[in-house]
Length: 352
Image (cartoon, rainbow, N blue to C red; front, side, top):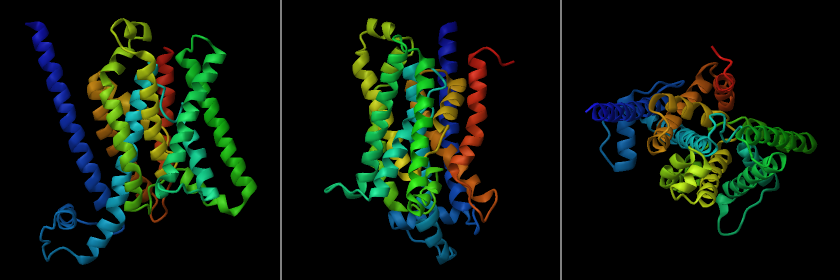
């Protein structure tokens, strides 16, 4: 009887969390589109979306100028921030579950930096692969992010055969610093052409447009589907690889799939928005404190909360010192760096 009551309580708690997450992302999207130099009423936004996407009749009370502002400028920006935030959050949640450490995320593991190197090289040399065209940029970002994550694991194994999680994370930070230096060196040596990319590297979803949503969306869907299909395996591996093998999980195969899926999401996100750190650290940590470690719920909730979080971070970046716009990566770092320190202190048993 008591176990049934506990189960019902947990189900209600998770259901409420899903409801709050859905409400959060809805409010974040409406606020992101509504707030700006020109304020647009939320109902007008709904009318415009209905008119553009579904052919509904738009009331005469809607200012025609709002249509262009919403559909051409703000809505694609907000949706891109949503996709990037969701990608980084679910990738972070999967890396943390796989490595059994709350400090793991695409940024601290060096995956974001690897993707950035691929993107910068592609932009600088104006590479374009025949037949895939505009997908060349995310392709090279994803390839470099996958190479980076496997280099990090290989190097960590060379340092320590047991591959302790702390060693992997320290190796990721080393690789991230080294790759950041490589990018800085390229910018310093090549002059003005790459200096324009500095703003992109700091992270931004400004003036991207619908084309960038078309670029990230297929990779987002592939990565998310792969991770959601492996949520049970992530639960099993969170107890350790030996335990996972005992319950019939093909550890090496599943680890490979999860690492590649996380790298796909990170690479595509970096390709369209630049390096945005700590989203994959903050969001999963917050959700674990609310609902626990079950990846069946943690992964989809990370998609919702991560998307809403980055939409609000972008809103803050363009309004806090308007009309000047801060890079969105600055906002996430200001939030994420103290969180990183707090988690590290707590993990070491030094926090109060």
